Length: 399
Image 1 (cartoon, helix red, strand yellow):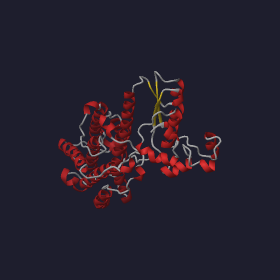
Image 2 (cartoon, rainbow, N blue to C red; image 1 turned 45 degrees about the vertical axis):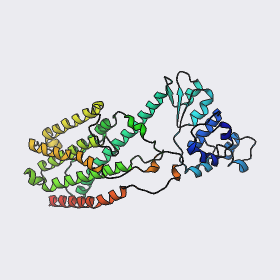
Image 3 (spheres, helix red, strand yellow; image 1 turned 60 degrees about the vertical axis):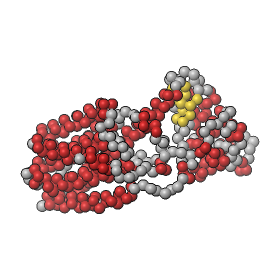
Image 4 (cartoon, rainbow, N blue to C red; image 1 turned 90 degrees about the vertical axis):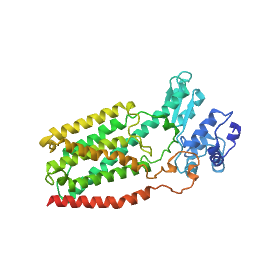
């Protein structure tokens, strides 16, 4: 489309053209500014006075639906109040308004004017478009690393809070005491953030469609991963509460018994941290570990610190040293989280198509083909059974 044709469109007509518009030829800087406004709703006139300032000599009541860029109320009704995330590049003074209206304005550091640089959010110092691609890649990597951390953190939260809540409900001393929970929280927050927040980007991130600005931070596959891992860990803790004294020849509810449960729970988090490196259907927990030195350092520190807490914590942590056989078995229980990571990814759960950006995406079919509801319903009986069994166990220990 040419700029002359573009300027003759009404706001409603432009909305129809936008999904197919790829090149706007022979356009003016003002056309660029209007296009950005229509895409993201930024700096859209909200009052009659603002509209009159943009369109002097025109009648607001008669022409407000005929002249671009439209007005805020009309734009919100047509686009559901949510615009696209728009990036704009420019180097000239005339590009300033479009750079300012964009969500991300990128100006050129070598050839760009001071006006363009001041109006932009990012300055490309070498004037290369490949640097823009690199910026997008790292931005997506940071976003995914935050989601990896959330996936890991929520799994730990679900299990730890369920056990603590049921123990408090039964009026019994919880299997994980305050110092143990403090260590688990350190693994979950500080260590987890360092390990998963520093994962390097991969080129596959550029193949994914961008997300809408109102897309959920936790996707459906992430919920699947959280539910499955939390269910396994709860089942394991209930099993150890019930069969642990017999398996390890220790007194029911003793410090030795709870140390075994604590050790198995921590190693579940250690191995699940490898699972959390992927938030989709791909299963490659050991992939590119040579590019993640911080992750390896955190895992090593966690294992060493866990050994020191169990072997030398004593009365402070209320733990007792374990034998080599007990260490191997509890680490083995934790390692089962890895094959569980493979199995859970076989459950067909896809991301919500409406979470991806794209002009006209709101007009697509609203049919939901996700298996997430089926997954939750399938796991619900097991979760209820585990919670009931756990409650019964703490009642037994209480008496």
